[in-house]
Length: 212
Image (tube, helix red, strand yellow):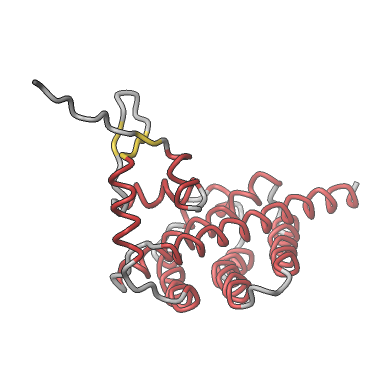
């Protein structure tokens, strides 16, 4: 009598995000960093084995997670370092700015991190206040220095993505695995920065209409 092996249970990226309770882009980042086991189909799509995901979940629950605020504080220094290495100079929107405007934009990374730290450290506070303030700052600065709405969005996404990379580096240097606390924090990070972006676009549109 022969026995057949049970078929592998495959999950999509969105399935894993729902199972872990995190944003799909968080799962994508974990996969790209090699911290979450992933496989590729012949068409290049990510697929995950259920038993591997469950094993990963079980392992990460047992390990210590650093406080989000501590990791973000470490990230501030890394953002400044990476900006100084020349990433900004390759951005088309940045090339349009004069010296004064470039100095102002180089300060944006720290402002975004500080706003996020304030939001994370006060879970009962009104996240919209800080998000709207940052969105207004990005929009008004872009208008003042002659950037259109697409370029203003590109500028914000540059610093948002820089923040995500720096945050991953901070966790990796502390040798902390991405567990539940980390996943929840990254989900809140995405929610917060999404609200900043919405505020940016709303403010830019209002400024455009007022300037007509």
